[in-house]
Image (cartoon, rainbow, N blue to C red; front, top):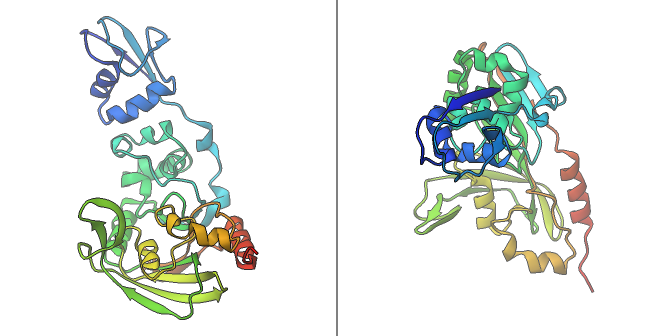
Length: 315
């Protein structure tokens, strides 16, 4: 998609001018387009801080991006006229940073690969029907794999957002964690940021949070656990596991505390955060019948468990 803009005044920065002339485009988003060569001034590339003289013609091109053509079909767990369930791969962000894509969904195509952009390209009827946020009703962290739900109609969107907000959706995660977890446990501890900000952690300044953990397999230095969050705080599972001394392997927020021990016991470095959204159970937004949607742990998750659980102490 291309848009032509005419500069009628001089002295303004290029990024500021384009953001002003295109409603819904933030300066951050415009800077990204400029850096990618998608903005030309009289046919030439300029920097974001280039000062316009007045009278120029500016071409803004929002690229489709080859990544947006990657098929969703291989990731579909369930689909009908009201909702879509996908197995999100690790490394894929749910939506771009910033708010420009909320006002102009096509802005999601100008950034790095993201689920919102994939939905816009391959399920355009969702956005065309007036569903907000390209149908996205909840999120997973970039490095977390697993089940995600997308609404396909405005009515389904409202129902599903309400269900997640009212904690009517049962969530089950699987995680590979540091240390031997000897017993099932429920952690009830407030989560928030400390008085000076920083990472999400158990904190007296936080909000009440509760997670149930059960042991699937335990080895001397690593364990495979299942987590059922009973509340929905940001990074809740990660913070609660770190709090009880069993951080998720691959969690950059807590890696430094166990790095020496991992080296000592020859635990291989994780390829990413070892957290997987295994299943969701919810009422269907149209029929109200209970639906359970699950995604088996991906190859990298299973291979890492095999390698980490077989590791032995260095001599």
